[in-house]
Length: 328
Ligand code: TRP
Image (cartoon, rainbow, N blue to C red; front, side, top):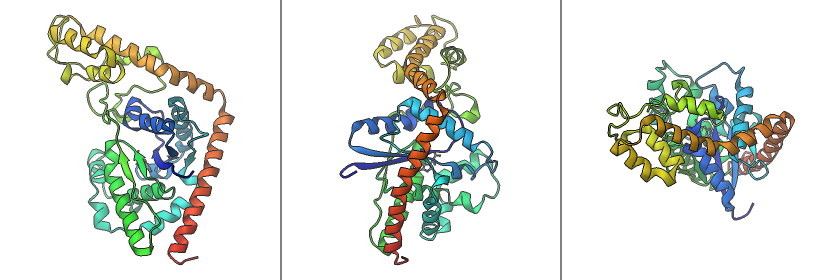
């Protein structure tokens, strides 16, 4: 597609997606897709899952769940091919070449990795785990991705991608762009306990939750600990429910703020109003998800079509790589 900027982004398939995935990245994927000036590619990073979990038995099932959520959120597979990393061999091939272009200390210095080792309390990691961003660089550059809409946590990986692209181009002649990350406005939506929204913390609202589940979960959300009774003045700026209002209920934010600060608005009412807005927002997602859930063959077809389209781009990039390296 001439003149269109290439968008490449992906996620690891770890099950159903939550609101944090939407506000952190997916929202931008859909907006850029609908903008008209971009050509999107969306990758399911199934090999990346193995860096922290060698049990591969659920990867396929989780990949399908994730595709359903992407489609529910408005990814249009006609415009934006969806594909699995494992099904396009060129990812592995480019990963191997790239692994020669970056040093071990550089990868050990990666702040995203350090954070993960700390959070998951990992012992010595595998060679493949150290190379996580090298595989991610291959994911992006195989499609000559120029814009990478992701969550904030991914920026260190994109920096490594840029360094690898630069090094390849310096060594063998220009083949690759230097991609840029693109963040959303709400790149960190807190979970219902105020910590980062994450499946492992059990504090999520899923894109596929039914309206009653959303209400039930919202009821348990933590609010300003100094606001105990209705009538107590609250501090919206430290309250995560207020953040949900800012994101999903923009038109009533001023009223919610003054109600909270004066004490007139109680936390239970405030939460239910947020739940209602979130439900309104998710309704079209639920509808589209149901449509595709009832058509598993269609979802498989979307995936195989996406993989065919991605493969043809990947092959042509690898031909250029081989030529630049004089390996052909
Ligand atoms: N590391 C990303 C995540 O954890 C997933 C990913 C893999 C990715 N390859 C990518 C994201 C390429 C953007 C571009 O969410």
